[in-house]
Amino acid sequence: MSTRRGTALVTGASSGIGAAYAERLAAQGWDTVLVARRAQRLDDLARRLREETGTTAETLVADLSVPDDLARVMSRAAGDDIGFLLNNAGINGYGPFAELEPDLLAKVLHINVLAVTALTRAAVPGMLARGDGTVVNVASQLAFAGSLPPHPLPERAVYGGTKGYVVTFTRTLAAELAATPLRIQVLCPGLTATEFHRSRGQEPVPAGDQAVHAEGGMPVGQVVDASLEALDGDRVVCVPGLDEPSLIDGLAEAEAAIRAAARRGAS
Image (spheres, one colour):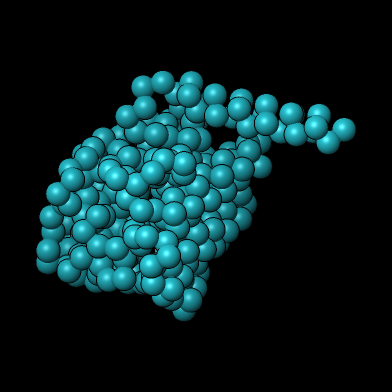
């Protein structure tokens, strides 16, 4: 194991990408703060990380849609030991927009948008002051699927909108901080072999019921591999499985062309 590297705060750490990323960071020598709703899952993961890596693993049980819980996690994210922030917590709230329960809609927005923004804001000032830090915000390939109809894709207007926000927020923040030592990434996995599709998000999958959804998908280890490789290559947008990174450059070029055309039209 590498020497101690500081502390990584990981949200959505009770399963899937969050748990796998926490395991990888601990193996690299990071102490961890594990954040999720399911206390038993967090305790089990923390115990395993301590035993297998000798690092410190702290648990913080929180529902990021609850203001007081979010405030507690923000306070921890602002700690002077936090050198890595993984904003992985998210819920899908899939379903026809006209039938989406207002409470669930609000929960999706609070967790997928507000919590990501607030925790990033909590962590970044300290990272800048210390001259080092990494923020990885987990979005989704569905952020790029706005005009595509459902079936086989889910009915996803709110979820896709929130992940589109995460992509734009993170890319814009990375541009703002480009002259600093901080590493900023938005991770956009496609269908991944987790339990994500087993719940719409009102309640988490029961703590003892550990199984991935029936749709399968990319193994979580490959998603983490892609993210870490992209960080090493200073790539802001990471789309695991994308063999042509130039497509991301093409997206930026298209945006520049749209802005230029709009300026010409206004003159």
